[in-house]
Length: 150
Image 1 (tube, helix red, strand yellow):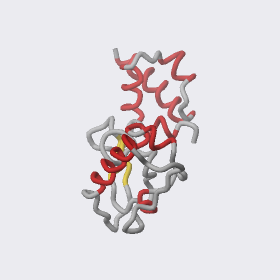
Image 2: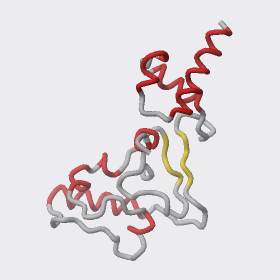
Image 3: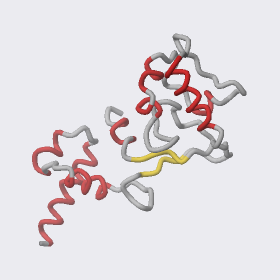
């Protein structure tokens, strides 16, 4: 679980019933999370981990701030509310889409390629990354298989 946020940054949610998606923390409304787009609003929230379904469970959005919204904060809140007008709930479960693969499905190979392209050295750096041991083993095996083919 300690790598969940890092993993989640490499994909996005395809919104269906909105029960699995955290309103502020997960990427679901555009290409960044709302906490990253509006950090000042996120900092004055009372409940930061609420799901989209919980927030949108009533005609008035179920969100409370620790302070009154004025000025830029109020303008940003109106921007968020306006963008929610285009969200439609469905009866299907939310789906996480892996952003590194056209199919949307996670593969160790796609993660490995991204790490290598970002300057991670297989023998040293992968062992120090915050990835599960299973993924680390597959990445090291991928490296060995690729070097044996060349």
